[in-house]
Amino acid sequence: MNTSSRERILGGALELIRSGGTVSLASAARQVGLTKPGVMYHFPTKEALMLALVDRVMDGWDAQMSRRLCAPPEQVPAEDRLRAYLDWCLSGEVDETDLVMLTDQRLRATLKERWVARVAPWVDLPEDLPAERRSRLLAVRLLADGVWFADAAGVFAPGPDERVRVRAVADALLGD
Image (cartoon, rainbow, N blue to C red; front, top):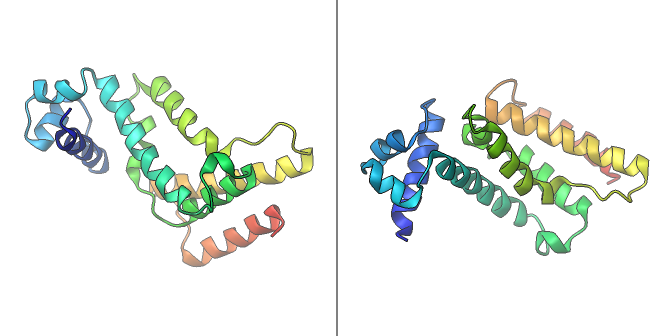
């Protein structure tokens, strides 16, 4: 498989989303100067393309959050993974393409399912946590989710000083 063409297609499709365009096999092909069959070589259906876009976005998230850990994510406690998620959400490194799972009404359930599977390792909390601790960690996750969504949607995104204050609230909830 020609990785550079595949990556160009994904990059072009993400640019379409950033610019408010609609992603289809044909629009992705036009965006990167390929034919529709050229795109279909890598992504036989629009669903395959959109799922690959979710994975591309989540690969970026995983890389950013993993850099904030001292070991691979699966080897650290849930609280450390959640802290990495919070740090990343507060970093301001978010853009519209992070909402890719919401961009196609017909595929929304499929895209959301993939997104949930990819983000769950970062935010899922063990069932055996004491209720108060679990509630505090859930509140931290919801704070992080809110900042992420505000940044990605470009609506009421907190400024730098507000991010510091939100982080202080989250740290208090984390018990730092």
